[in-house]
Image (cartoon, rainbow, N blue to C red; front, side, top):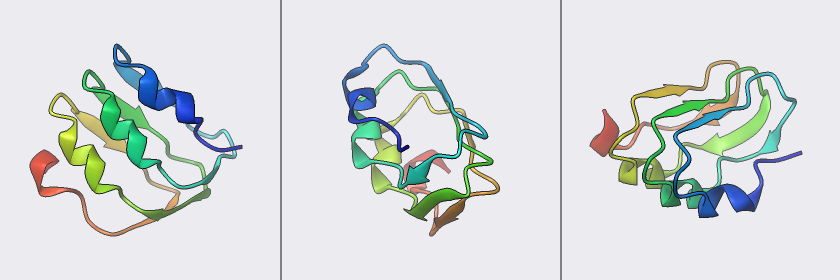
Amino acid sequence: GSIPTEIGSLGALEGLNVEYNSLTGSIPSYIGNCPNLEDIVIFGNRGIKGTIPSELGKLSKLRNFYFSDTGLTGTMPEQIC
């Protein structure tokens, strides 16, 4: 499966941990609609591919983004580096 679209409507979400869940697809841009998101853990999902979405730059509270062992490419948005 993929990261569900409903994630984008969870404004109070503080952590997303989906490590080793055999997810596919990409990190959806609507993840940037979660202003309280502090931790994203998606490592171990080799089916997650594509680029790191620039919308992660809108997540001013983001502290941790673990994405090793995925197919993600590109650079981190400057706003969170």
